[in-house]
Image (cartoon, rainbow, N blue to C red; front, side, top):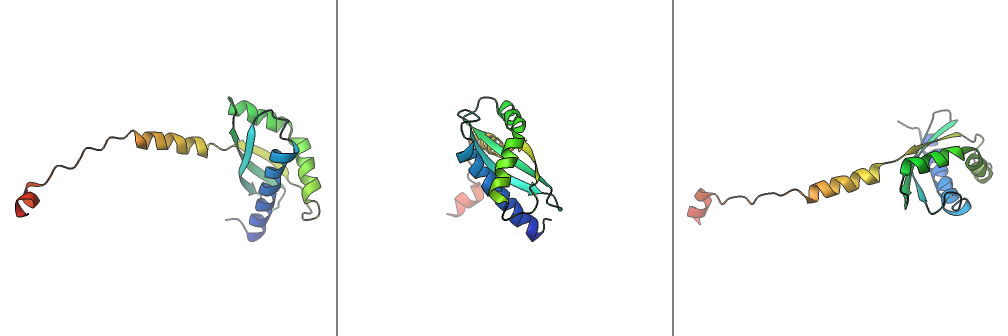
Amino acid sequence: MDSTRQQKYSRLIQKELGNIFQNDIKNMFGKAFISVNTVRISPDLSVAKAYLSFMMVDNKQEALESVKAQVKPIRKLLGDKIRKQARIIPELIFYLDDNVDYAAKMDVLFSNIEIPPVPPDEDTASQN
């Protein structure tokens, strides 16, 4: 269970990383739309695990690797944005968040389920 401090810090980092991906370095990754779904922060606030979702990308794993290759400039931009609010700029570790893909897959599976109609019960039909 995260402390209140960790929760506030992770929300701050999530918001600022989202702004960085949407505004500051949006052209660095081509046409990819990157959203920060979740940030988990270590108890000592030194490590932030950011779960990213990619849209308009053919190979999401390749896009994640290109983000990982640019972790130093992204961390510097994050430090520039939160330096007045945070004493420690955490090390960033990026992961692929596949919850959106999983939800879409489950939606397709549920929509393809054929449920046969319930046969009328003979006892209830004779009473009416």
